[in-house]
Length: 149
Image (cartoon, rainbow, N blue to C red; front, side):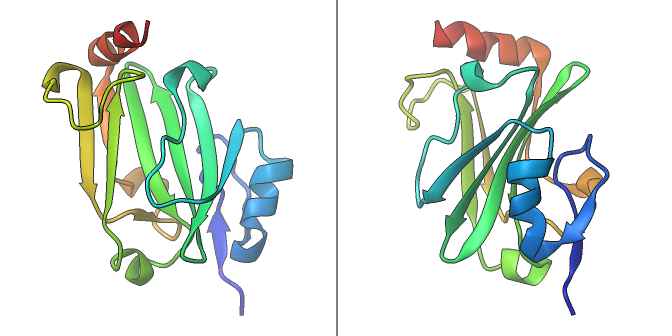
């Protein structure tokens, strides 16, 4: 029996079988989609690439597909890392996400222009309203973007 999951695009109400989700994201969803084949550490996107503040990038690590999702909701910017796996499978991983100005060193000690999340990834099985990630206010995001220029 195949699990049915919701598309990670909050503006898309489609539910598909997990095995068909990547195909839906690639061909049938309105989200801007980027792809990376396999990663351990990577820069997934720069904020300059994000149009209208909705971005979704898929990739595979250890035979598990995942998504990096960036979206703006009113004055708040949200960044989520979502594994296309069960909550139990997600609990076996720890991820680190850092949002910072383009070209900065991830190890920089400048807390005013970077935000970090360390913890387990979100599961595609969990309702999107319960996803945990990085939430950045508009003023702080403007500081990050000003560091990119």
